[in-house]
Amino acid sequence: MSYRIGLICMYCVIFFTSCEDKTQKIYLFRHAEKIQTDSTDNPELTVEGDRQAIKIADILKNEGITALYTTKYKRNLATVQPLINETKAKVYYYEWDNWSAVLDSINKRNDIGVAVCGHGDILLPMIEKFGAVSPQKTIGKNEYKTIYELSISSSQSIVTVNKFK
Image: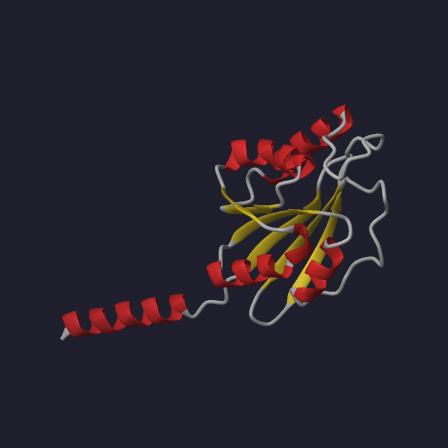
């Protein structure tokens, strides 16, 4: 009899644990500061941009990031490299002009900790597509030191803005 009660209790624990609402964390940030005098569409980072990339990695290294999405632009790759070194996250590449595919991939994979390195004109639409309210109307041309933390559960999506120095 006590064996049956123990089994019933175990099944209840497993059932209710699997029904918990897991909150997914998605960290979106723009690539670090790029060389403005480079007339190509693929400039590298400035020295300050290199420092910003290290700061992003330092901020996010203990956030449980297992998947990282980035474009293949030099500035994005240089921005995420320190974070990859710190977290060993799996890297997924996306095309800048097809960013909605990133969201589909994130939703399908359902990783709990995700980082997305994007571009200034796509981060706010990404936030809105995830169901959160955009925290601002635009991202300034020289605004590089912001991480948008999305907390997504089955009932809500909340964005927190983290500015760093």
